[in-house]
Image 1 (cartoon, one colour):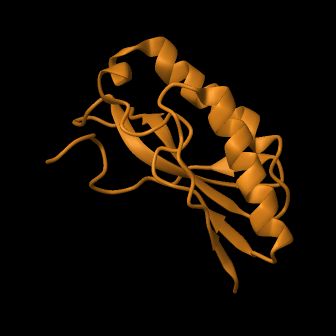
Image 2 (cartoon, one colour):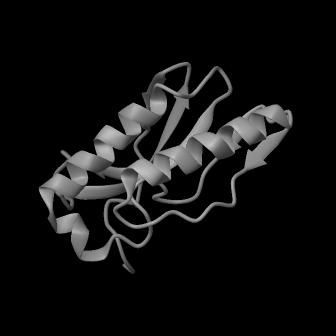
Image 3 (spheres, one colour):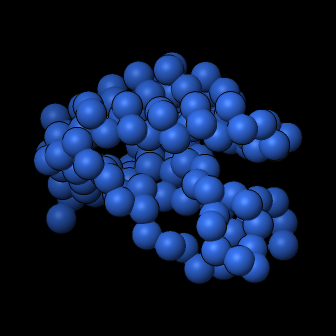
Length: 120
């Protein structure tokens, strides 16, 4: 299996530019024959988001960017990092997550031990 590792820099809070950059990187990796493509941690919102994680509009924009990105992804799977809400208790309100996107849909498996941001 040929894996495409995207070495991209995202801009914190610039969801539209991050999505465009991600889709361009995805398309390039796919053209080079990648069968699975991986983007950097928290790529859609930019890293590190720090106190922006306290803003509901930031989290909403991050989730909208994930849904918008999924529309541009073909059958080759993409793994991309984003901020997810954590409904499990006890635990923090947000978690550092990864979504698997392929064919305009996505899944986000639970990542044990990654409920919070920063150093634990």
